[in-house]
Image (tube, rainbow, N blue to C red):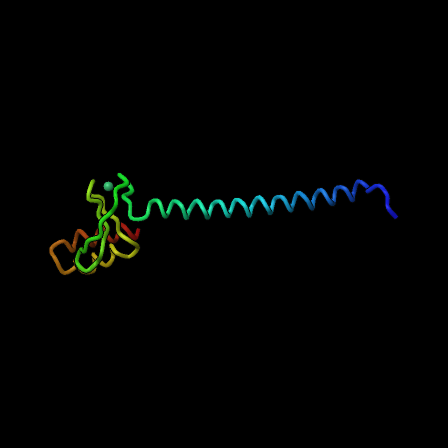
Length: 106
Ligand SMILES: [Zn+2]
């Protein structure tokens, strides 16, 4: 029997459609966000955070660090400061580096 849908049926289908549109919108937002992060990573990879110049890699102790040839900014990857401090702990700067390390972890 075909008849006019009741208000409850209409509400049900409207609610279903709203939920489907919300899911589509969320999926689109997540995809856009991931794409934006990929673009930003590609655009900023190995670029100085302060002046945007291309970073150069050099070795400090046995750790490779990134230095900006334009402004002198230094970028350390995760764990590199600890490695440098560990290697320098036998030298004359051990006290200052030890303090810096403790502050870094605090
Ligand atoms: Zn720079």
